[in-house]
Image (tube, rainbow, N blue to C red):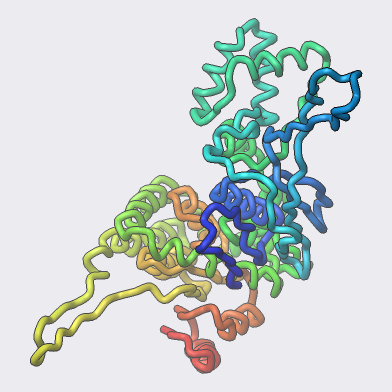
Length: 458
């Protein structure tokens, strides 16, 4: 999906509305609008929301006031001087609407105009100085422990160095707590940076797909592990005990489209990321694989059934490819030959293709995924991985480690399924290349089908 960007080059002071587009979920849409608004010098707030259907975003003026004066009859002797009435906040007409349609969230701009000047410094906006709900709870706890506002603020800044609040703001929160207003509201303005405390607080909560028994294997879409909406799933059995280890929901067509869209949207920024930065992520990735190799090997043994020693070998053979990806900088160098004939120079450059896909077999749950996506993403591509539906656990664990290593959202995505997903990967015009490992008959089928849309296949 391409974002529809409207720019006015002759009016640099104009605050542009965010590009309309399609998003995986509500939070991603809100984050997109919030980030773009900050870049234009305004802050948005949630005006109205129906969690599963619609969200309306407006402009938060943040304390920009307009002074009003009473109309004074000059002929009247009762008023010897003008008097100002109280100032009031002016309402900004800006409004963006996000609606859920066919499984995706669609952003439209209802009114993209503003009636105020852009903020020169976004940190001056009151939302930048407000506390998160978690920070309010910490203030309550520290107040009960007898700490003073300056001491409380110092401790909050240890975990959130970007906090712009002052002791006065802490005192105001304490005053509300003393009055019994424990539920101090969390202002809904989309601030420029998330609280580090809030991130840690949400991280301790187990995702829903881990809480199921047996565990449901999630999709990875846009950097988030999300439970599929599909009602059809495949049981993953432990060959030794025949117990159900997990269930693999078959990714829906809407979820597959969302994964492709996420990869396509992440590609421009990722391809422009320096190769040295991409290599550093691979260095961290191979370090994390070594750290968790025992967990990976146990996962492979429980799902695939191969001996534990063989499972270690599976991971180590894939790890060699990750180590190779750590040195791709020189391999991405092109060639240049000057004056191959009179006045003619010859050169070649290596560029990433775009969205690539990998289809993996049952045999080597860790090695073959590691053949595919580390090289692809280090070269600047984004990737959609389709692991075997019989043993997908190792691929999901590797994706978690890649995310922990710093792989940006949308660069790696995971979908699950059988024939329908294979056909969708082969037919999608946004996927530029496919890597496949498996039987000859399946390979010939994918080759012929993908070739019809101009893909590169190996």
